Amino acid sequence: MTRYLAIVNAPGITEAQFRDALNAVRKWRIDPRHTILRASCALATGRIVVECEGVEQAPLEKWLQERGWKAEAIYKVDLVHDGGYIWKV
Image (tube, rainbow, N blue to C red; front, side, top):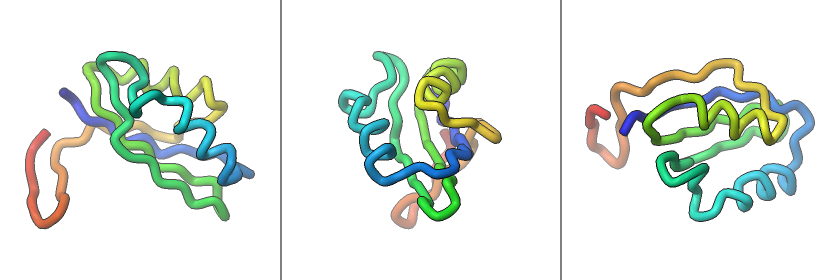
């Protein structure tokens, strides 16, 4: 599976809005072939970083748009570091 990293601008987002947007994703799945792995939000700036794994980018773009979140950029991830290990994706 391909991993994507989306940099999102959502000015004025609240904790409740962030929680609602992600609680709506059942088991973090956008659909059977795409999973939200992680999302981090800086409430003061309205910046969100979303990490998604899936077969193509379009479902992530659609999911972000449905929440009213503007993706400034979406990148295909090549390397990941987690817990002391680095692996290719």
